[in-house]
Image 1: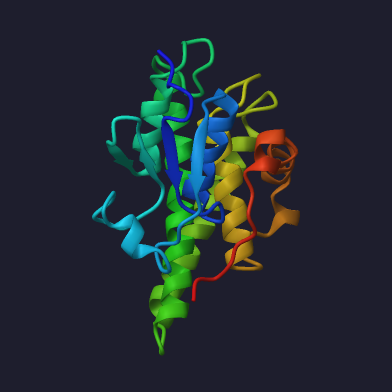
Image 2: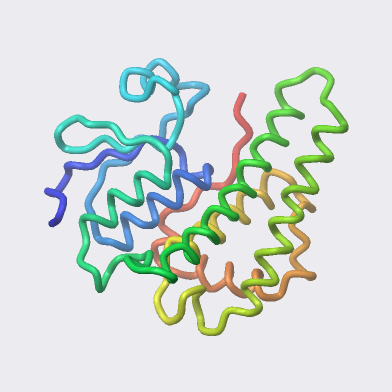
Length: 215
């Protein structure tokens, strides 16, 4: 099953690691799509009709159906490609292992987003909440480093890049740009090499946007 050309519309800016991971997957899968770089802050009125949560990424299908949440969107995209191209194993135990790493990476990004909003949107931020977000993010980074160091091969699951690899690279880049110093690259050789390998790929270069703080 393949998507008709031009039938997919991806909403959201690529400085979001969640939007970016979907855009990269679409490009790696060779699925044509239209990109609408709408912001949940500046373009909320345009996003609300297709996503009542006013969140990104949002993927609009050819029949007008809207999908929300990057995990759900990628699950849909996986159904459009044959088994030999899918970027998450169809069977266990490989499937839950890959999804576990992706969930850890996106959880890190969630904490980085929470930390940013705490400091940006509140006149007086909570030191306790900020510190909690930082140690949660740091714990996720440390676990990812340990597991990547123990994973043989160029990618997490072997010779082919997968959704977990994409999520890790996108989420670490976001955390690093949104919170300089949060990602201590010299102490993370396995993740540093992993992210450099990913960011050198054409799809990562094409689907890239520096983090810009919302106003």
